[in-house]
Length: 183
Picture 1 (tube, rainbow, N blue to C red):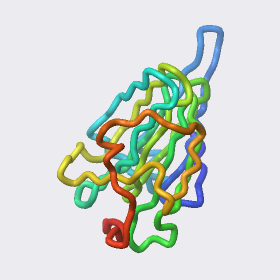
Picture 2 (cartoon, helix red, strand yellow):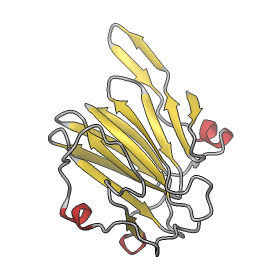
Picture 3 (cartoon, rainbow, N blue to C red):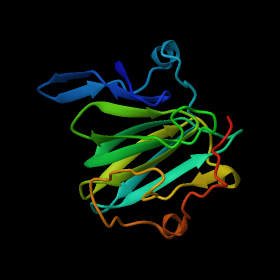
Picture 4 (tube, one colour):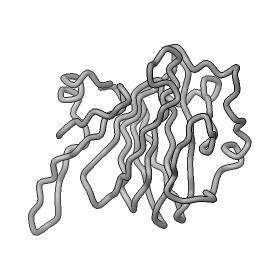
């Protein structure tokens, strides 16, 4: 497992080592000891499996506030997605900056998104599936959302006119009252 830092402290790209033979391949996607050595979260009491039936579906950008701020370990297990993290930590020097990367089921890779980041993804293929572990159980009363197309963030999504949930469509723009979250 190789860990690649991004310009956002707390967001790490993981290059997983695949052991291949004529039968296929095997890869370890998580090891608590290895993650602890990198200073990353090692407890993931919730695992989520998301399915996107068609290309262009966009889910997010969602985050949880303290004391339920969560880390996520995200892996595309079918198809291809564009995965995004946005820094929502109030006192961060990278507040409202974003990082995006393509994750593919054909490549052994993952994205670690630390606490204090909003997370979302867009399916780039039909029938994309995403498996992600969360360091905190879902807490609706602590959930926050950012608009995928908010100009204050400026994410360059690969596909225009995404298919959104009703909840994500209703998310308002960031205004002067949004000062981020405190962990």
